[in-house]
Image (cartoon, rainbow, N blue to C red; front, side, top):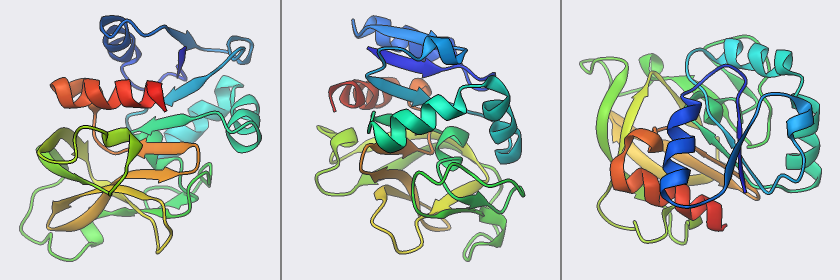
Length: 204
């Protein structure tokens, strides 16, 4: 069973539709009481870092999520801003993140090599999975995903990188640290590559 966290951000129905097409059981959690018998979690998100943290706190689900992810080791997949809030902090805002993956979120605007490139980074891009990445099983070559973002995850020397892409410079576009996974791109908009990734997560 896949549980999608609905805290008011992200296209929840798009993920539900993908999993239904894959014949994988899925449910949506809007309140802490919905977080029962959870096997895997998806944390979507769009918009700004601080707003996402505020909405997650306001949902009342954060304490239960912290318990499940940190101590019960339930697999979780953060997507887009849902991946960024896995970090300790972001240059986009002032609130602390969840800190489930070592690293910080940085602005492309401050990165080398981006002087003449438009922001946000938007559209399709090649993704290079790290060897043995469970999320990208069967997609070790020729994986392409749809991006829309102006900030990227800097793992700061940790072992959390799960895949990389290039936009002016190489950047981490997926993280994997223990039971915590995240992708910067939108698998729900990435055709068969995205569907395969969501299926892989369900099988981890």
